[in-house]
Length: 298
Length: 300
Image (cartoon, rainbow over all chains, first blue to last red; front, side, top):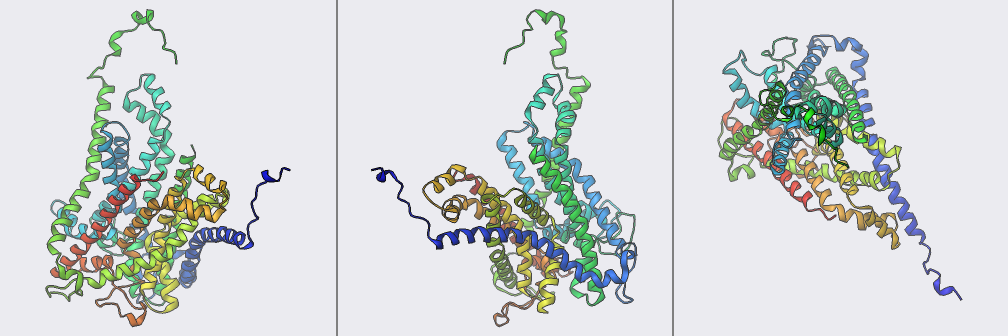
């Protein structure tokens, strides 16, 4: 006589079950499609670059001339410009970004003011790159001309604008890393008699170092691939010149300038250059992600 | 926690050492470093204010009603606007959104609702790496994948490139907002007999909707400002879209207009570049502030 206690639930209908399963599979397939996009990009660019890869091989990396008339292509000046502009930008943005991240993770300011400044720094990252370029052309370059040897678009203004653009990345990720440091460590340091800055320099920063380095590498990845602002400010001259007041070139500005009008082997050469840039940023980004993920697990 | 007993031993300490010594090198070092950190913070936000001031003064003075309705003028001719570029940006960001929003949300549902360990980790890793791919590379890719195959520059190619740039932003923000929905809500839903798609679509997703929409808004604002992926996918044009071509034709956009008109020596076109830049930054500012406000209004 226990039948009244038995649950009266019918089995799910076949349609409902297949709906449920297909929902799961659609989600799964679309999620894998994201990884697929990454692979698709690699293959697409590599195939388009093939003619140039076969023609020039690795010499492409170290050749100086870029001459569509004679079909002679080499990206050494662009690689040089990419690396130099990124490292100048890092040299400026790393100390400032670290300063910002420390200042905004300590209790110097009331929380409301602190949140506002964090928001303002984040906004710097949201301003479109082309707007930085516009501002650089009409404000920064004329300003720099006033007291330096600068004559027009060159390495210096491009690197300066780059440093402004990557600063928020460094500041935000370094701040996250610093905030995630176990407060017990700091308390122990202060308990042993360390001052605020002794605790920061000897305990907090070393503990947060993997996150900070990850943030710096993410910023480096951004700087290496940044296109519009750099294209508008660097002068686009395909030469290796050690002076920061001389116009230069980067891989991305080479692409932005020449792609629309290119044809034949030039397209393949540009694709080859894109592949090199893609490969460099991929390595930098993967390393950065590994470091930042390690930070989240601690 | 017990308080250490120091009562008797106090005499052994030099009491002076517990006082703050304003001239000791350690204090001075701290003061100087604090000063430097504060100075750097000031230095970091100054560019934002300078750029905003210039955009306000030069952008607003170039704005007028005709800017939104007329076509870009030839050099040295006063008047004109960038109505076609606004329309083009809306079309291409719309295409980008239509492609990336469903894909991104479903992928995020897989990551947070069907978390399967290793595969999920790889996919979030791939998402992060995808967000680090330079936008110019995405443009090159869209050129190879769409422009070369269809043999024409088009709004579709531009929208496709923007979709790839929006995708990681949407996946990440959706994933984060789904994870903020408490586990109890899911258990309650399953407990009254809902299966997986019912739980996700009717319970979890609605709860996270404000945050997801915020993420989409941010992605839209970011895409509207992207220039590099449009340079050789959508190109630029001085004309309105011809609807008979089904968008398979060069299409203007605000960001490419800023670029094209910033590097020419003609006063009237430079003015328009400032006005367009002002609109782009206004869009970014508004969406950032709205998203701040919306994340404060969480359901859970």
